[in-house]
Image 1 (cartoon, rainbow, N blue to C red):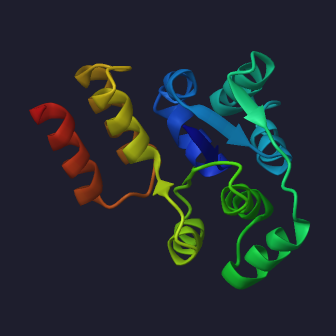
Image 2: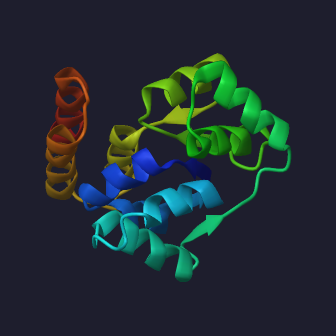
Length: 167
């Protein structure tokens, strides 16, 4: 399963300590803009920057280019998106990926309007648990970290925790 993932989701999954597990289970695809945005944190030793660089180097995460650049400009204008979010949406619109992962509010709106398959960090953590890539303790810990570092409404994290804890 190819997932186009933006920097917001990468950062949150890295902070939740499950980015590497996600890269092991799914084919994560990023763009140059997303990669550059993430690597801006490398000088400050941000875990997401260092881990993303490692995953790309080890070919566990790949970088793709959008074929139709006009789509990017249109998405940025129509939905007030940053370059990285617009590029991962474009990858999915071009069918280079089957799913988009974003936790960005505008990116999620754009994906819904464009009728794209959409997941967020919470969904990825629950999927990793269901697929037995992480155990319930790891999943609950990751969800707690999302509550701490993300801006999710409490009920979203609570529902995911119930799903992981009750399974």
